[in-house]
Length: 622
Image 1 (spheres, rainbow, N blue to C red):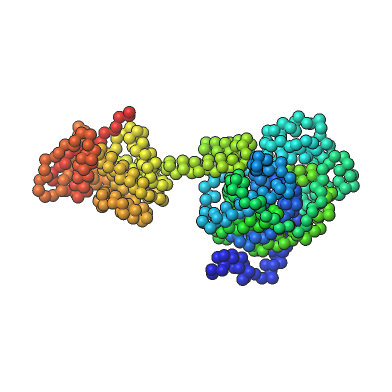
Image 2 (cartoon, rainbow, N blue to C red):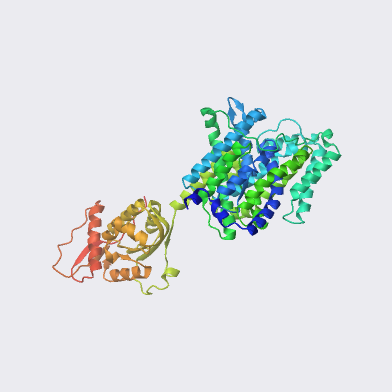
């Protein structure tokens, strides 16, 4: 039991069968040919040699699959992570020099260090059991970020696809402007190879979704490039891969300044990878009805990125495309993804000699097609028409993605999500039930006038009480004589909510309005009892259902009469009470004390004697 906690794959191996092996191995044979060209393309997005993307498809994929929670989640390089990596290298400087300006050997050490730091952050989040934090990231934020990243990917490939020369500017709008200014310098060989790649992929996909259309298309375009010697026509080639086996890599020597410069980009990559991996993992687990531990998945993804940093790979996260292909290819366990990582090495041995003839515009065409598929038009439509808040979050995050650095755009999106969550939590629904409301369908038809029934839905704290008072004293034209407050739909209550509720009851008593609480939840009732509110109200003013609360309210108001702004509450049997003491003006405590005495007297059901209090008055607006 303890071993399985640290090595979750042991449970899989205990029940592993020959049938599982056949199914997983066939799924790996389907996934790997698609994963290799994708990884090459994503490395190109990140601004590094395609070999580093292929290296990230080996040991990192295996480690993430073995230590993760979802049996179908396939990790590795992804478009969004690669975009953040490219943005980091274009904006972060070490010793006054941008990472993108450093020689490849020096630049890659910082990329490996970034992967290592990102993995450590994710492992720390997993050990701290923060796997559920991704639920607080708004769907609108993720849709906007994916859409903006798709446009950034497409704009970033214009220079390669069009065969333009010169340095590539950073940013969406500069890249678009550069392409328009140099339309007269288009290399039509490059453009033709990119278009040919897109056409071949689309045509081959019609054969089968499992068919490795991207790999076959790249092989055919590479053959075309070799036959026509496209390098002589100014077309850039991928070039040879120096090492087939991933070389061991280390981050740069420890430097506190460099660590500070890389921490925020690493945190952005870790957060983005966390959100994507957990969302995909939950979706894959739901397909087969599996349980899903988000914190364990974070540990697996973090260990995978640490492995990438130590084996010359770029950071990555869970991939929906590859994960879905594992499921549709018939994989049974996490070992299908493990076999995919193992098969990547022999496949690289076969493809390495052919890689030097692959035109770069072909990979650019693959990325243009991927960017088009990233735009989820239906999700965009839903966010635009759902609510004004979702629409605003979508547009703001989308604008930030195109204008700001990607890591800053991620933090903007996360901040908007948290603000949105706080806003929704701080504005629980406070509803006044009208006689025709479904919750009052079983109520007595001859209710006395002046009973105001309110329902709070959500969390109970100061924000809810403020909204309740606003409706009670500002919106209602008809003054209430008694308030029935239903907490049956309150699912969370803390000390601040209990304090706010006590203050609300005090203010109602100060205005001669008794309050009857309807508390159905045992947890909420226990909290109210521990905080003393139930003892403060007494049993005659607490009910378990709305109908019971209405019966208590009816019995109370039927024994109360109000005239000339004075309400008379019946007093209990016994000696005559002392003469009524008028409340001290401006002293709500004394007023509330008299109101509690009157309410308790009415609840006791007595008939002789009276206690006189001013009737309910609607406060003036100031």
